[in-house]
Image (cartoon, rainbow, N blue to C red):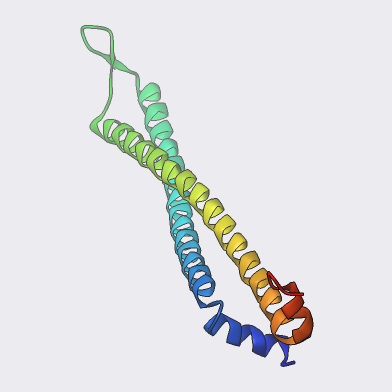
Amino acid sequence: PPARTTAFEDFKNERGSEISRIFKENKAILNERKKKMSEVTQRIHVLKREIEATRQALEAQKLEREQQGEYLNEDGQVIIEEEEFLLLVKLKDLRKQYRADFSEFRDLQSEVQYCQHLVDQCRRKLLTEFEIWYNEAFLIPEEVQEALKPGGG
């Protein structure tokens, strides 16, 4: 019989071509999803740093305002500088983006798990089909194969 690796390549190109094609497609989808998940993870890390930096800048603004003495409007609400207001708006926007990206990350995480399951399942099927084919083609004697066929004796 031929070497198993050589026979496996032949099998993937002939009898197992359909399952091999599906396996390659599933693997490509898995890799694309993993890449996308990695990109989203990087964005999340950048956003976390930006949120922290903005939060610290806002804290510094608040401390400065408290040290200088706060101004209140006629309703008793604290009046803040435009810079502090812009930091508040920026922080709100960053947090909103973080939540959206984190939600996308969780969705991608589920997709990656599902795709990984499909790839693993496909790999097992490809290997199982190959083993059956290899044993039938090269290891089981023809007279035994005839006896195993329906109606064989």
